[in-house]
Image (cartoon, rainbow, N blue to C red; front, side):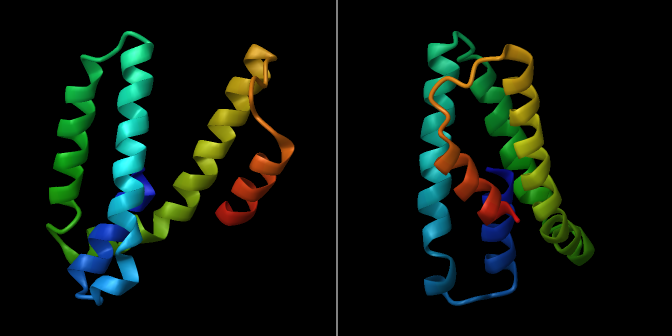
Length: 113
């Protein structure tokens, strides 16, 4: 979600045409809805306000200085890879892959790379 927010803010900040980043608001909305469902069904609905404030603050802070948004854009690949490693660590610790398929992980690793 962080990467999508950074990509969207970057595109808006530098004035790219709307057609080049129109899918990002849709993807962000899907991720937010998914996050709300996860928080609701895990009993952590109160955390949604914390995440909303964090994302709103991050959205604003990205464009305080030009170097901040450029640095955030460069770190997106690292953050995406780190999130995959965190997911792998969780799977390793729980020893339960649940509904994870090899095809899904392969596609995710390929797009991240």
